[in-house]
Image (cartoon, rainbow, N blue to C red):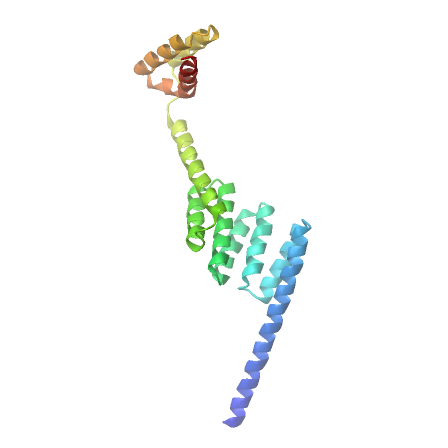
Length: 214
């Protein structure tokens, strides 16, 4: 029994020592990757980070920084995968906030605004004092609203022949600086034909000009 105990203890000590050596090696590889990243040698930096993860699969800095390098190279799918891995290895709220923040930025670039909003919200839950994340969240919300408006606009019917004629007449009035008459013409046309809404931006500009003149 005594011999068996010493044998097991010895194995455990060697395993622990091996783990420490791997962690040190992983940290060294991350430092090398950081240097290469700063030198804009992104492909080489990615290799260093990947090697670090082979040494220590749950190493937060290696996964997070690899995600950054991949994002710069427009490899968004793999970048997201690495940020998700980084979240699993995150040990502090600050680390979680940073990874969620970058996930949000990737989704923002991909115009997946709803997913970006969720990521930024998660980042702020971990770090409520991050003003940059709060700004990005507001921007994502704004872009989502604009995206939905564009989708709605694309769904509406194109201007009818009647609407086009009215717009042409309004343009002729504008060329003569008859802004109020042009606005009245478009308003009456809208009452008869809803496809005139395709020219809502034009109508708004007319209202703005009329207001300035007053």
